Image (cartoon, rainbow, N blue to C red):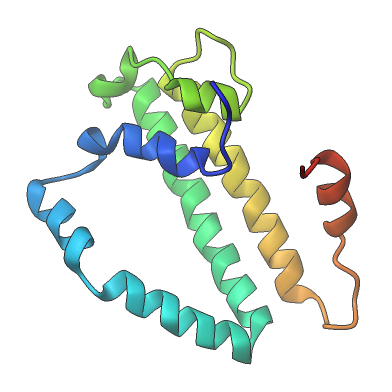
Length: 147
């Protein structure tokens, strides 16, 4: 299987039936103008103050880390029966380079690590002045090959 950049989203979509609370929540997000409105407003905010937006996203990522930590703890306590014996989807195994026998807990750990990294990147970018060099630009281009 070829790994794709949107593996995080595709992994969660694999488990959408578990993640959704009801048919109403699926319908709401499918037809609500809220996501489009948020993206439009965020784009304007980013144009006006990129630092603010990076800090905002950094705080969102902090909450995501807390949420995934809570999910992992709940899974370990046996409170998430639907994920106890759920194998990791192949796309997650490929993207996060998990072992072939990886379980959902391994996926949650990998996602939480990604969210933690995103938190650090966004807080760093939110603290920088426009004249400063992006400290992540070298590391990002040196580890990835774009063809």
